[in-house]
Length: 198
Image 1 (cartoon, rainbow, N blue to C red):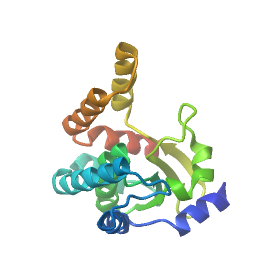
Image 2 (cartoon, one colour; image 1 turned 120 degrees about the horizontal axis):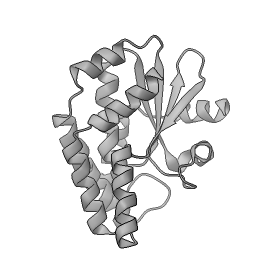
Image 3 (cartoon, rainbow, N blue to C red; image 1 turned 180 degrees about the vertical axis):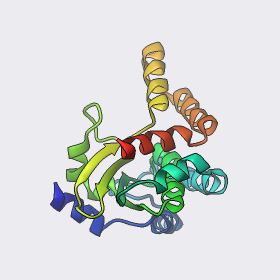
């Protein structure tokens, strides 16, 4: 696993680099990834707007900042994502705020399209779902765990919707976006801090 993690880290981006990559590709009418379509480009445009909004409004609670800074080790959060991923647009800005608030976390973002082999090691319910956060001990490069692609409340929402309606449709996606809006990033913060604190 270490060579795959090392390769992903070598080709990874900081949050600002990831945002710039998305913006630069949008200027060319493209999205991240090998596959291109009008839908993926549209999703990337929408996600760019979402991330701009979240950059402005999301905060990390004082309690969570204290917890993050109480960590005894330093970590790398290697996030496997794409610019067109709606969940990624809701989650990655929160991860960035947490990393900025902490002196113990370095956030790196790698594209799914360039790291399928690594993502295959972190399958969720039989699928290569993104975003996936791989928690790496900075000093040893050991993988300490993973998280994603959604907080548990969002997972439950989608599972219950599918049980009730039989499909995940546009209404389900709208419900999911509203869930993220109402949650304000609290679940993501709490779940990742719990993972770090063991």
